[in-house]
Length: 242
Ligand SMILES: NC(=O)c1ccc[n+]([C@@H]2O[C@H](COP(=O)([O-])OP(=O)(O)OC[C@H]3O[C@@H](n4cnc5c(N)ncnc54)[C@H](OP(=O)(O)O)[C@@H]3O)[C@@H](O)[C@H]2O)c1
Image (spheres, protein in one colour):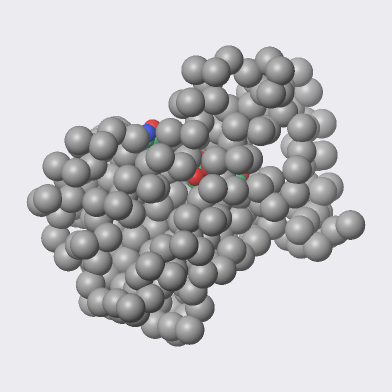
């Protein structure tokens, strides 16, 4: 089991889904948590005794102000993100900009402003997506943003290496969370969509937030000390399918 004892870790998007499960798991494994998201009540629901901060990670001035008061960190799990679908032809440019901001500008700003708050030997995990490893239609804005996140992790691994700070990205397949629930609620055939999502991978099921959180815990702990600059798919084997 990955011990996180004695580490102060920041989790973005900690008010729901994968970020919430991760924050709770990291606490169980001994970490002190700093939680950020736009809804304070949701953060407090995740872990009532954690340090919770309201923050829109797309806002440069707000992230800079937060970083100025943030205590030193032994790691970050940047899970905040937003899914909007639509073809390149149909998606309004305003949606494209919003998706790029929520999924790429946010992690970039957090890395930019909080990088100096990381202690030497820290570990950072960014959340990408397996639909940025293999293309599907009607996902271009989200997919290119998450592909940018994958490369951001690699570049940060190089830039932070002199301080022994590691950076990796994980690329989950579909996971049962509020994000997926919103997507299914908008579908004309939610049951069929769910079955099709599960059928894509060899293990024939969706993932769970707990499984994704466990991978993040491994990457944040000292057992993974030689792992940096990688993008790890966690998708039931979907990335292996021809
Ligand atoms: N679920 C999946 O199938 C799946 C698959 C691959 C990758 N992912 C990725 O996994 C991560 C977690 O997603 P999830 O499924 O757990 O979805 P979720 O439950 O909707 O969580 C997303 C979180 O991001 C936060 N957030 C969104 N925009 C933000 C902003 N501008 N500033 C600060 N926080 C913001 C939201 O909090 P507030 O609204 O309170 O701010 C929310 O807590 C995301 O990056 C997502 O893209 C999910």
